[in-house]
Image 1: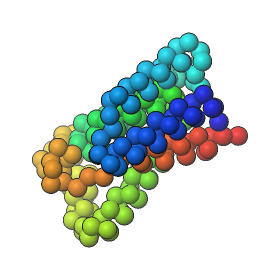
Image 2: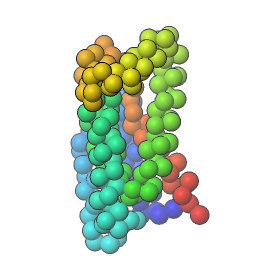
Image 3: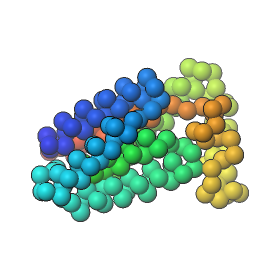
Length: 173
């Protein structure tokens, strides 16, 4: 485990998760400097990954999370946080982080559905989101997106934090 990436990533992810839980936002003043610092360290050869890996990590995060943002399933703050993570850890570790983040986010969503007694409604909506792409293409659902205040949403930075921190331990050794 690279401590040059571990400590800043731990700090930023813990802070962003706490802020997201409290305000439902991941602030730019946190995610943008995190991204720039990860890229700068890689550029000067001081980071945990090479510059090529840092840029590739940014690209992978932009593609994967960018699609989720585009269709309204992820906030822009979450996207910027994932891009920053990609700059620090590169594409290999980011892939692990994103898979675990998806699993954790799914578990959080199920817990939220059970807690709020919206299990059936939420599953219907998820099915409509997934299978609706066949009919409407890759576009936002008319009602199931983060800009619709009546749509159900969960803070996603905690899932990003858990997935990313897990990735440090899964690749250790």
